[in-house]
Structure formats: C-alpha cells, structure tokens
Amino acid sequence: MDNNTCNTQFLTSLPGVFLLALLTTTLVVLQAKLNGFAIYLLTLFVSLLIAEGFMSVMAVLVPHYIIGIALAAGFYGFFMLCQGFFIVKSQIPPWFIWGYHLGFSTYSFRIFMHNEFDSIDSFDSDSFFQSGEAVLKFYSMNDVDVPTEFGILFAYVVFFQLLFAFVLWKFQTGRR
Image 1: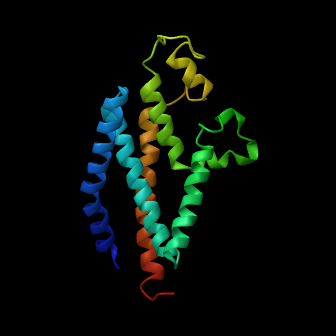
Image 2 (image 1 turned 180 degrees about the vertical axis):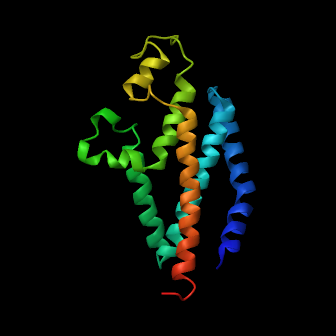
Image 3 (image 1 turned 90 degrees about the vertical axis):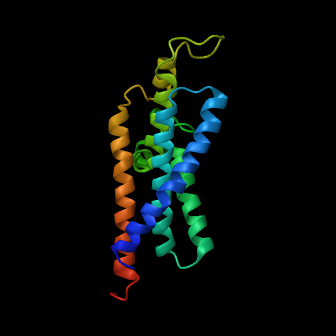
C-alpha cells in the first residue's frame, strides 16, 4: 500500500464518520437539551476520526483480528479511566498521570465538559454544585482552552494517519 491508498481510505471515511457524528449529536444534544450543538458535533467527529486512525494502526500491527479488538478495547478502557471522570485529575497518582495526558479521550471530555457547564450560572434544583464553574473546578477543568484542546485532537488525527501510512509502508510492502 502506498500513501495514496492511505489518503483515499481516510478521505472516503470522512462522509460516513461525519454522518455518524451528526446523527449521534442530533439524538443526544437535542433530546437532552445540551449546550453547543456545533462544538459537540465537531468534538465527536474529530474523536471518531482519531478512533478510526487508532484502529487502522491496530489493524496493521496485530496479526489476528480478535486480538487487535481486545487490545484496542484495553487501551480505550485505560484512557477512559484516566480521562478525569472516573478518577478526577487531582486524585490520579503522580506515577499514573501520563495516562491522563496521553489519552485522546481526555481532551474530548474536557471540551464536552466546558461546552456543557461553562455557561451555567446556577442550577435550578438543590445540587452538590452551585454553578457550572463549580462542576468544572471539581473536575479540574476550569482551565480548558477549547482551541488548544482541538489542536491536540487534530494533532492526534494527523499522528495516527501518518503512523498508519508508515507502518503500511515499512511492514506491509516487504521492506523489512
């Protein structure tokens, strides 16, 4: 496979991934009355592109399909554990914080949280949190810069596509 094949695979997947992101965003954001339809859609779209790139890399690295899926599920589970929801960033041990920074889902989650809670001044009912800012502070997400987070996500898209092309070039064309 050459770079044209990788580029074609990426470009032909864009409409389907966007359609999936659009349908999911429509069902979730409108039904739950969440904030920021466009930000949610873009974050989900880019996250799905990253996931597709990651799975493309796994597909060319692992010789058996089921092992690749199990390995990828392990990585995704680890990233979800460290993204700041199950274990808040301030409670992640210092020797384990690399999982927080390495996982792309961290940056998606930070954008989702900022998108939903930054604009909330107060909650209508009695709750543990007084405002959206309090929620973000509790989850250590009061420093979210959405353009920077998107920059990191786009860098992940490029990284996984380049890694996919490199692995195909190096290991799948008989150049060992």
